[in-house]
Length: 398
Image (cartoon, rainbow, N blue to C red; front, side, top):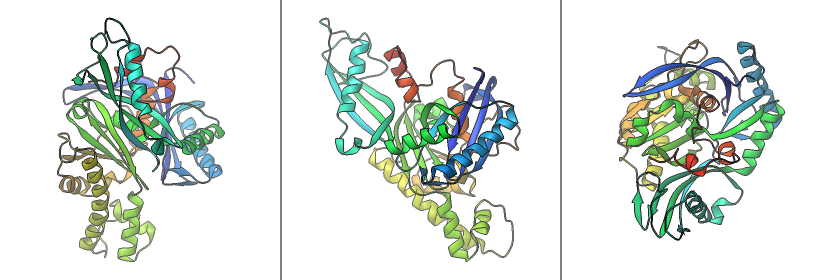
């Protein structure tokens, strides 16, 4: 594969999506912030088989589905896909915030790169063992540094003091799930370059810098899970996944109206107009289940002290974002500004990509084309030999 091409693979519970992007970019100005977007060369997708709530329960079926999506993308682009960036989600994905501190090492009390690194490592050592067992850290995000008890805005490198503290977000997943995903993609003949949490990958395409600075929550409502990422001062401060999704809305409609799953899915997506279905009852069924989902989001925001306190509100993406009135219901439930995510797909056939459900795969493809590390992926970037710790940390600092 050419260095000017990058591939993102999103293995979801409903569909597996593959995006091949090239380093030809279209400009867009959003809220005064100019963003550049790689050109999508081609896509591929297939129904997900062998997955449940994001977990692989039958590797053979997942490999078969992935190969179908890869073959479709290869046919569209004329490129053999050998390497890719991979998303990870599922109910095992979550984040934990921890704080740790170190005494400044130099005699003149000046903070060095080593002090910053040790402070982050100290915060990691404070993670409870009961939480970290069987889990793998896929992303480390320094949220804030304190010097002698006082918050530092920006990086503390070169400042002087006695003690440096780091408040750090660690995004983790179940180690078995991580290993299964890597192995499965390998079985399909593709080398994984890096692994990124799904909501973080989606944020690259759906959130502006202004929104991330002000504070917002991105909710990716998928088929069987809802994953959220909360941003403030430009960095993710929390990530969580809930075991509910669009399929629960579909099942409720099927049971409530005594119709088939297929009809219920079409009704949910607005594909059936008119007919003999009771509109008021349908709206009540959908609203009840979506209220359950937003109640989980609200509970999490309360837990981290951000409920009704995110000026940029909630941004909704994923396959279920197209449900009618979902943004208004989110606004009422969370008491926050609400909108459906919009994505600039650049120069792409609109029949290939129809909605923001593709934002994870597209966001992943950006990572391989960026001139600088986005600072949002974990395994490759964090382990890159010789990488300057400060140049890595500064990606997360306001």
